[in-house]
Length: 114
Length: 114
Image (tube, each protein chain N blue to C red):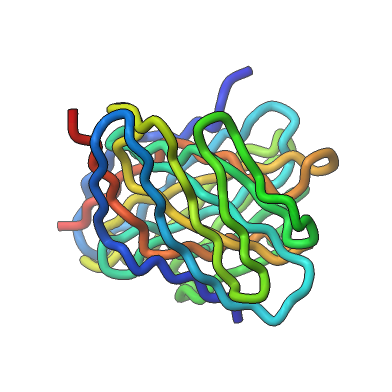
């Protein structure tokens, strides 16, 4: 069974600075995908970034990048130049290839201070 | 292109009643998944439908059911409501083919059971 663990219930960052959110996962599968989703107070779950397990290169999307350490089963999210609009709950999730079942961590609440 | 639409946004029911939630996926998306989000249990997978067939089911009692129509719209039903069913219910749709395994979420239906 897959599990996803986010060890930081809350994090805060100053506007324009960089913050890293941690995530570890466990799976016995070789074909899987990892995601970071953002959930602002509006409740809409928004995809931030996606990583295929078979790709060694870390995914990046503008100010968002990941540090994917496959052997350590670690998948951290780095947010650079933090903006007030980045404040939200961030969920790390994994899915096995061919499955529709996303397995989520408990989330990290990110506060951005002006 | 319109996103995933869930109706209603809010519902208040009493114990013992039943409720139906609706989800309209992104146009062209044929896979629809449902998740329950609670403060205690986090995000948990309920079930997934594709081409009007339930393909995957999470670990929920039989009071939770769903269906999908030929236009890919989906409904989930909860019968004999319990206080513990109070949650945010999220629907996600996915396009088959192309970039795999990305689920796009709606804003959810907040169900309160009194």
